[in-house]
Length: 426
Ligand code: PLP
Image (cartoon, rainbow, N blue to C red):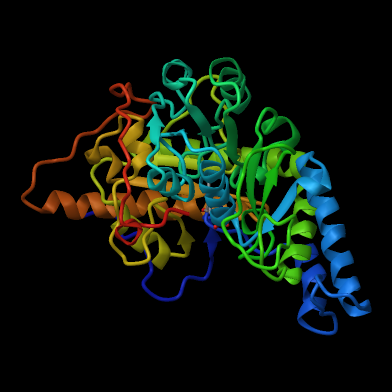
């Protein structure tokens, strides 16, 4: 009789392990933005004292973000989030300089879909989930105008070789723009070093403890780019629209707080994540840690597993019932989960990929969260496998408790797809 893992009533404990989807608001961000929903207001584009005060708040926020990212304040273009920043980078550069657009095969849909929209193609990653620099070298013909390579992947957390790729671009396709999506990296990595060599950088507030619906594109001087939104000419004519002042000041406060504690939080959360990984791999027969490996850096907060013999959606349901918030990283607003293009690009087949589980820790994560997850998740897997064994289907394959050797990555091609047919992947 399999162990009964979960309580069906309201869980006493909640372990929020979905920081890659969004993070709790940092107190510093809340304190900074709340006055802008009360006594403070004003349109920063106006010409009177109330407007000037709002403009000053936006300018101070710009200084803070620039300092954290390591750019000039004038390079910061505030947007409605990471998605808009990525769209602006890809479509804006393509509009200014039409040509061949490349992106890695594991980009977030906020990059992949605009790259598909402008007729671009993907560059393969290897079985660790790292961009294949040889494949990039082959793809870099002189007509390439843009390479988009994320700083770290949102599903598996693997850090990408942005500086090396940028160097290759400079040699093989001089004049091409390098865009990096640093949305997931921003909480964990020193952005100044991470984005070295990139001309454009996308960041998002709500992945760093700031409010949702605000982000920025960092655009280095001289980068050929056209605006997506036309209107009043705010943000150096690059992004028209009245500023989201509350969001912008909240984002800046979150970036400042995250940067100030980045090293200590990364070390603390990295230890928690490692304990969680070891505990789960020991307790779940056949579980495979996805991506990375010896000498391949991962974000400290991310743990991705493939668990044979179960379906992710069923596991997520069970663990949610028991108070563990996790993700397959291919969540869908419509409820229909799609196979992950990231796992496919790494050569992970649908059988193993069907049991994908992403656990992402962050600034609020504690030992108690890990303890709770270690109690709940293995028991839920055992329960599901027990249910599976009682069915007449053949037993699912087991892969061993370590990195498995996977077949060579096959980069999927992307086209002008109907975005409504795709699942958003946070
Ligand atoms: N890029 C990556 C890597 C992400 O993980 C996400 C969100 O999950 C985005 C872009 C989109 O950012 P936003 O939610 O701010 O639109």
